[in-house]
Length: 261
Image (cartoon, rainbow, N blue to C red; front, side, top):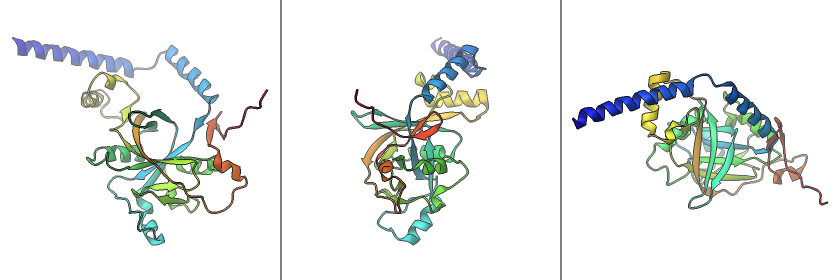
């Protein structure tokens, strides 16, 4: 009797989860839309740091930094990819330094980072660099925000390679070599908090037919803070190279000191 009862409970639970998913996936209520709109308006008044994550496309290996000839860099251009982050933040320092960001999906960068996350050696070396842009680099943010371009083929992007062979953009405020702590988490539905990812993905495929999600959350462990090289050429204002690039009120900005009273 125990086995039939257990099976019945599982079928009932599956049916409940299926109905919950359908309710979560249905058209948002008017109240939910109002919350979203209010949140967007509020966040536009806050300043967000701008960063570019760089990595290798799936199925490619990075060139070692010891081979730093111009010819070897040209051969490596096609394997590198970068994407401007719409969100980036530090989430913890202890017991491990962790950062987080989200990516729209489907995207080449999301596929690349998830492919690296499946490798058994992923925790031993970095497979991405988070380049925190300086106020002198809004053009870099715009360049890497286009999903149909490979900006590393553009001459205006100056970069070097980390010890793991990944691009570190010259002149950035700072660069973090990181490894994702696991595969990305879907943000269109949070039921993965209460069940295994395998169960959640099966449910998505059954209900949505395997359609793509809106965005995914990546959590990464910082393995190293890179030394950043100065870019060649001159900027109109060298002071901008020491200030962070921020996104505020739908435009790029930077910080300023509050006058003393």
